Length: 136
Ligand SMILES: [Zn+2]
Image (cartoon, rainbow, N blue to C red; front, side):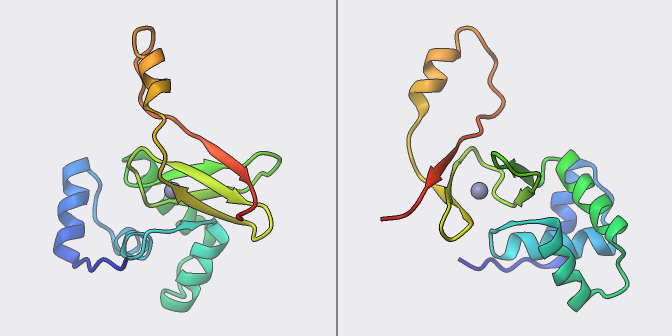
């Protein structure tokens, strides 16, 4: 599902979380949000190289980190991998990692029973769950 975001809308989002709207932040945010995706920094860099060739890898990292710090994106880490996968879906959701396709996707399952069991004892801010396997 492709979303269309204009710069004013993005500036509003940034304003709400107190993040200064620089050109590179707007560009990378737009890239991540227009089509919700799970991407590595290399994939983001590949995209910026094509569209904003002057952005260094350090700038891409800094931009990702400010988006992360302000809660505009999340990241997922996989078992047995140093790879960090950035996720533009910041709602509480869970993942399936297809070992054959080497691909991460969102899955829609109800695990509210976990929260219900824990909420007496803990203040839960997020739950991260990655299921590994292959698709049937
Ligand atoms: Zn996701």
